[in-house]
Image (tube, rainbow, N blue to C red):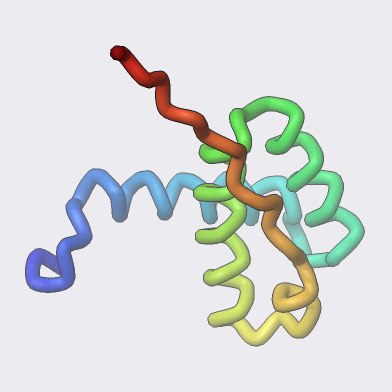
Length: 86
């Protein structure tokens, strides 16, 4: 883990994302129920936080072999314009 640059805190954070998702989907992983969960997250979090969490959940679902996980598209990054100070 240390060699790959993944911190213990980040690993705990990803584990929390996946655990919360699996608790919501209990007892089985369904696309319709997952979409409801993703919508709730989108309403709760900023786009950046939402994308971070959904990316990890989809990565895990892909690892499990869930076919529909590849069909979920992440939103585009928000437009960021840095302020210029002259």
